[in-house]
Image 1 (tube, rainbow, N blue to C red):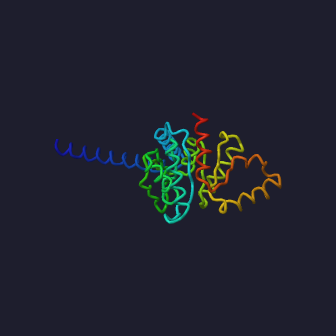
Image 2 (cartoon, rainbow, N blue to C red; image 1 turned 30 degrees about the vertical axis):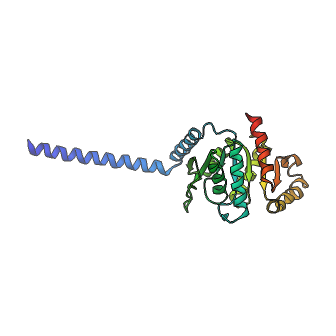
Image 3 (cartoon, one colour; image 1 turned 180 degrees about the vertical axis):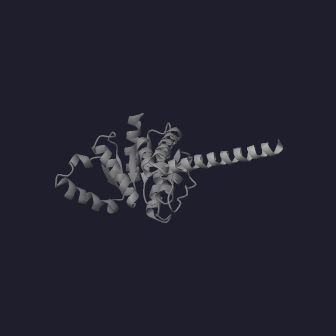
Length: 238
């Protein structure tokens, strides 16, 4: 009897292992496909919406992650974060170094709401230490949805591809009326003037966009002017 039971258990164990291997294989195959990716995307949206609930009326600030702490733009971004917090306006950034860190630091030191929406990158971007709330995203497009959804204005300091991407996405969404028109503020006249001139000369003059499509843009060097524009919009949205 003992030998019979032993053989039965060995066969059952082997059968269970085969079933487990087949199950794991099916799961691995699912994870490689678009179906599993869809669930990851849905989960990231849900997590973002839950963790950022109540953040409407924030200001999203963009700019180069490579900006040195000695740069005048770092100092101006720090000033902006401090003054936005003083006006009771929550600050949203990409959560990384450079301009993002400067804005978050200013808001954090002033006791304001300083939020970073970090992104997973091949060369890992660590969240800066001046955040009262942080959310990390796998997908850029989900992160961009969150930055737009909870903002009453965009501010762009000098930056690279990421800053330009967010700038043009905001203009496109406003132009196509997918979002309500809100201020898009460019800080740094010398940095942005060439691009604005090109848009007027090549896009407006050739009929590719209407002059009205650029009306949301303000170019300034003055942080107080930018904060006042934001403050008026924030009050109007309350």
